[in-house]
Amino acid sequence: MPLPGTGRSARAPTRKATRASPAKVADLIATALAIQEQDAAEAGQIGYMARAMIWASMPHKKVEGAHYKRDNGLASITMLVDPDIGLPYGKLPRLIAAWLTREAKLTGSRELMLGRSLAEFAEKLGLSTSGGQRGDTSRLKVQATKLFSTFVSVTTHQGQDYAYKNVALSDAGMLLWNPKKPHERSLWESTITLSNAFYRECMDYAVPFDLRVLHRLRSPLAIDLYLWLTWRMFILRRPVLIPWVSLRFQFGAGYATTPQGMAHFRAEFHRCLHEVNALYPGARVAPERDGLRLFPSPPHVDALPLAH
Image (cartoon, rainbow, N blue to C red):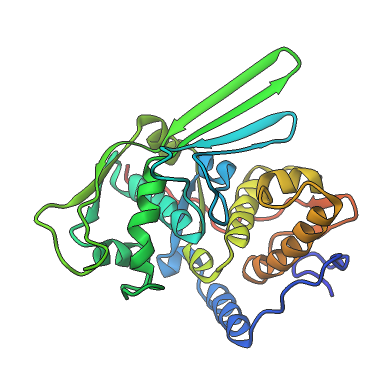
């Protein structure tokens, strides 16, 4: 089956990918048509993600402990957090990181107002304000606390050369919400003060994307893949082949480092790539035996100058 935007056929994954439900397919088609009819700027749906968070690629599922590291021999990415708080994971911290980046760029301020209730913050993120065990608000404060406490370190090491960059997301903050009463308003506004390093990442190195895509994609892997492709297409000048081992380093830390683990990762990667291509058909990519080949493509969203 040809991949959208490539004209080439993807190799069949070694493990059968989960078939999308009719409702999910319908949602993807509806979003794809909306994007074709009205671009992100016209729809007021331009989002931004700090480059450091694209590199970090947070865990997809819950990870025990306070240390999360990926190393491909040339570079390593480490996330650290207070053991009593735990590492962020899943879709919610990705949505929060995108909101932080966009809000910093729009306001030009390190101190961001989150809202006087959990429901108010959920609305800012475009989430459901329903409570309950499976509602967005029941998990939102937990994931926000985890994300705001996270420290990211990126290092490169070749021979005797060693370079690093450390980014803490915030210097201070107050989350005054009651998760059991998401609509209850507190007397004071909940706030977060971004660290200067993360603020500079937001202002100087943020990658623009279409917010509708971020909200439509459900899989954290698909979200990471979409954001990564938007970033790569901004800087790509010639075709490049990204080996499967490197792709698993970037996106698949939860998969075993065995042939079976690689097969599982490639199957899931192919499934997510089809979803991303449906929403970003201009991304010219082709899965090959040795990796994913990227061809120079137009970015999904053109960056717009902001007031700050």
